[in-house]
Length: 184
Image (cartoon, rainbow, N blue to C red; front, top):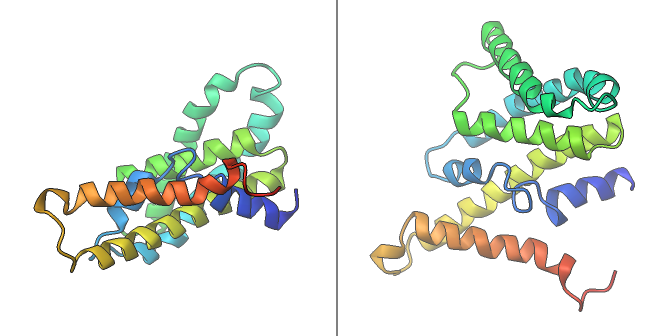
């Protein structure tokens, strides 16, 4: 696959958020009104890319060939937390990273380590996963903005209508890939 095809595949078609569920709760929480969403994207990029770069060689050379791949999640969490501590000590991040965000970048790094067939493909998977998260969060934010002035029943306001919207968005992203009427 080319670079653009890989990015489009993991960002839209086989979205890390919709297909794998990585970051869906983070998108749901970040789509609120008073969230500094765009300010956290650079820190997410640094944490995810840095963790992947540090882990790629040990995982691909030592752990996977010797059937020790069950250690990859533990190593990913360890390296991710150490990178987060390092970033907070340097002053790059001012506040501690929320738990849902940690789960997101751990998931993105694990996806890149296991789906990436090469170092470049792994980097592209990380970038595509973050792009997918950004797109889904912006879409969910705009859905919430469009729904808020409408007259919907009280029981559907807030989380229920947002979750239904996420389900419909996932169908919109994923349906063309599995439907018979879209030509390859």
